[in-house]
Length: 366
Image 1: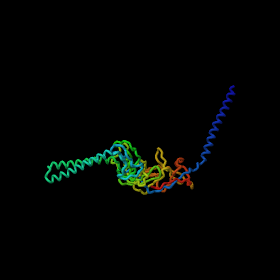
Image 2: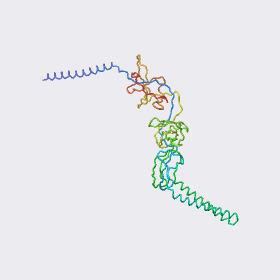
Image 3: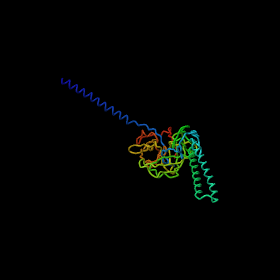
Image 4: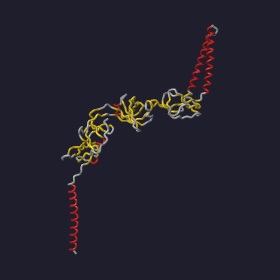
């Protein structure tokens, strides 16, 4: 019995030892096989860094508004007799737009004019008699006062009559009518909007850090999100205070709109052009890798073997952005070749091959 137990233990030991030996043998062979393998170079795109002419600027979001735009309101209440415009009509300054019933004012004007005529006749008669020495001085004064009062009454009624006819305060494009013929309206009722679209203004805000870039008369460029429209303008007003909540400075610019492509309330992208700078190192934003340790760019360097290329991860200090490019203040210099795409598979010292079959769109230097 004891002999059988010993034999079983020995057999079990041999089996376990064989399994352990095979595991170590397999792992060693795998490690030996992998150590002899050389990973293929990683294909990347690259470009040579060059010093460029840089057009710095400040980007902002703006809202278009008409240089002159108002909500037209009824001056004197009454029944609407005529609407003398259609939506989107181009109207001229002083053009009649709405006629309110004015029969009562016309009657009052006729009565006032008649009273003025009587007063003037009485004044002339009094002047004749006074010249002959018949009337007293106070009679002449009363006649003159009556004439002045009658003339003032005519002017007052004429003003009331004029307020029944709404006219355009300036030339522009009128909107949709908000009243109907026969409707009773009260003073202050909005009946349409009038916008002068020949000149547009753009309101936008920039961070307080950019306040030094705000100069009256400085050129700006605006672009719409719809289509490819863009136009230039100039800054005409700067708010003399910084909003303590948002830390933004409000700015207003003026843009020519003779073609009528901009409309009040439209969303616009605004760029304030700053003086041009020469010799700036700018790279595609795709070349920059950002991590918790900082921003870095892979620089292509010659390897140990002929025609071998490796990459060196260089940490850089970034500056301003313009379009698809970003300024590099420190870290790389002109003439170096950098990786512009494919760096997500790279580590420091990795071998690469530049793939010239893929060309990234390189925007023109701004």
